Image 1 (cartoon, rainbow, N blue to C red):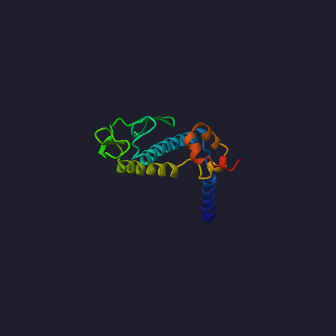
Image 2: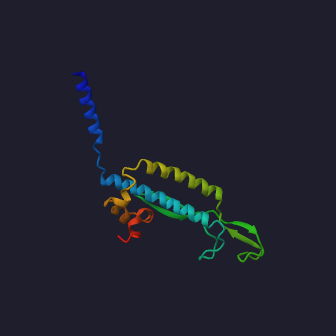
Image 3: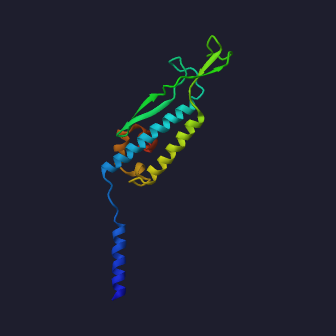
Amino acid sequence: MKNYLILFALVGLSSGCAVQQTVSDKDIDLYCQRLNVLHQKAVAISSNIANIKTTRTVKGSPYKRKIISNCHEGFCQEIEDSRGPIFKYEPKHPDANKEGYVAYPNITLEEEQADQKKWELIYTDVYKYAPVTHEFFLKDPKAKMCFDKYPFVDERYNFQKYFNN
């Protein structure tokens, strides 16, 4: 009799574990909000690194470091760093002023790499504890909700647009 009770208890436990919990639209939306914020930050950091030596933009001034702030419901404000440029004496540079100094963006590679590492770790945790499976963006019709609402999620995860489907 003991064996039957133990077997019954094990079958009951295993069948309870096999039932998969349904993920709510709210949980999916919150996950997509987090991904959208993280990708906005990643794009800003990449832009900062790519423009670390840009001395002239379309505005005629050196590139200004992008900062992502004031995030709310998956969307953030992109502002320019208020720090002034770094001047280097390079009299032969085409962007040198009358005194021979060139204005460079006030960006350090070390600072950007530290930010990049921090946000990669956060992204890893968000992705690790996602309320959906890894195939969600490929297969689930609810993914369209994220693509329509969050442009950075659409750009990063909407592979269907590349398959002409």
